[in-house]
Image (cartoon, rainbow, N blue to C red; front, side, top):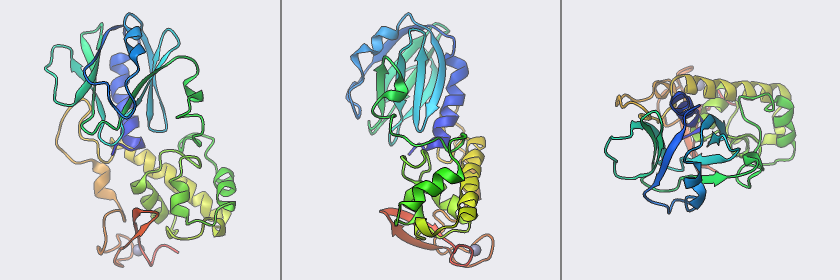
Amino acid sequence: MPELPEVETTRRGIAPHVSGVRVVAVIVRRRDLRQPVSKSVAAIAGRRVTGVRRRAKYLLLEIDDGSTLLIHLGMSGSLRVAAAAQPWKPHDHLGITLANGKQLRFHDPRRFGLVLHLTGDPLAHQLLEKLGPEPLEDGFTTAHLAAACAKRSAAIKPVIMDSKVVVGVGNIYASEALFRARIRPRTAARHISKPRLAKLVAAIRAVLTESIAAGGTTLRDFLHSTGEPGYFKQRLFVYQRKGEPCRVCGTAIRHAVLGQRATYWCPHCQK
Ligand SMILES: [Zn+2]
């Protein structure tokens, strides 16, 4: 599943090809995604793309008439820039033909993705309005996390994975950040001291920043296909390492299901 680093990597990959470029046509080959593709997407033909932003795992293609294409990659979606003449692949559901001869293609075998055309403030849309702060922006502070934790008797891991608390902390990143902050995933959120929460905030920022720098953990292809696994994957400390020795202390990594998600930790390093 594309996580925040893959979505940000996608944004950085496509932005130079689409920003400032006029849209020639929008081709919808299949409309029945998680929600139907907006009929009004065709209205962006003739308009210019002014930029590509990201909010949580949504990409926002900004159009010069003030409207926005809101794109979510769902479980299996990807965006890639192709030459307009290049043959379509199976599961390429939508293409935006650009005046520079390229085409932005939305590919999604499982069709849990989303392509909506919004007028008005996209951040006020019901899918975005209740989202918590971005993990790599100023709004995600120790004070913010402490306030969220104070009200929770729940374990810390599902709290940091709650998009109302902070967006974009998927299962891999939650496990890795908790390892780096030396906090056990099951520790009750409200019992964690502020200095430890400060370490957790820093750890979440660090794992996401490193993963973005490495091009995401799972993304293999948005512009080019190398077939190489993501670099970050080789540096995971706990995720999917059940029974393997901790890279810090050598203790076997533990595994349990917590909040219906596979959870990994080192019983020696994490308290
Ligand atoms: Zn350890």
